[in-house]
Image 1 (cartoon, rainbow, N blue to C red):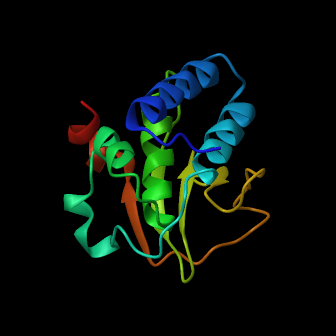
Image 2 (image 1 turned 120 degrees about the horizontal axis):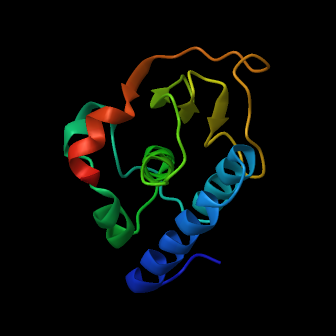
Image 3 (image 1 turned 45 degrees about the horizontal axis):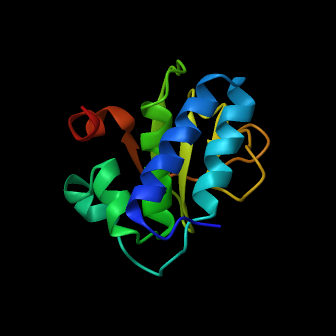
Length: 140
């Protein structure tokens, strides 16, 4: 169940990050992916062409609107704010969805709940890509 109040979402998100810091990478990514897949979805909230105006993680949780792009952004923020070490994290737009690629595509999340995929087993055609470092100013 997705927390109805901002304070509860914020607390649950913090607990998620704390729990993931103690897990193996595969389990942490699965937990992050599954947590964000609980978010209630809307058709459109964020658009790729406006990426410079996307909300910071706290505003994203406060707004409580999640399209495919917003959920991917939430996943990216959660990964970047965890204590785990990743060589790279980026958002990619494909023909049909927005995905989060970790460690140069070794792991793919925001595909579906309950799964962390591997780019080698599921080739994807990338239309646009944003490295997570472009959001460093939003997460401090």
